[in-house]
Amino acid sequence: MLNAFEPLFAVAKSNPEIAAAAVFALAFGESLAFMSLIFPATVALVGFGALIGAGKLPFWPIWLFAFIGAALGDWLSFWLGRRFREAIWRLWPLSRHPDLRERSAAFIARWGALGVFASKFWGPLRACVPLAAGLGNVPTVAFQIANWASAAAWAFLLLAPGAFGLEVLG
Image (cartoon, rainbow, N blue to C red; front, top):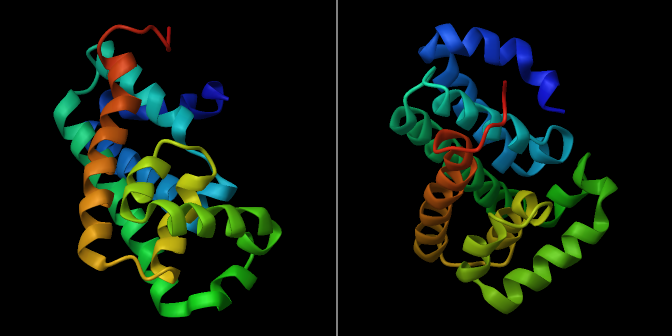
């Protein structure tokens, strides 16, 4: 799957501005309820970490764009849950994954804002828990604290292996 992103990596190697914009868009999409179910971008973000490790990109600016993109994607998902309530689950692609609705709602009911933090590191729940948090009336301040903290850690954990030593790209 990493090979699918080779054209993007090739452009990013010589254009840090494009790399930053791409990382922002990938992290935002990966964190947004609708997009992450269609286009999982985690692999590409790990690949950007490898570009950092190869000396092609700077770590902190790329991390910052991944962090902000991830936090804003979750924030938008939370807002969509608050704004559109149950109707949101009838939209594609969420309507094709009814199991995520129940799992996300149960997760939020049990863990609240702590669940928002933990879900950032847990595959398909990453896409739906912020949405369920909006539906489940998790307090906005508690959601945002968990959201921004988890986005910072998530961005670091995706980029760090490649940036600090794991060879992913040749």
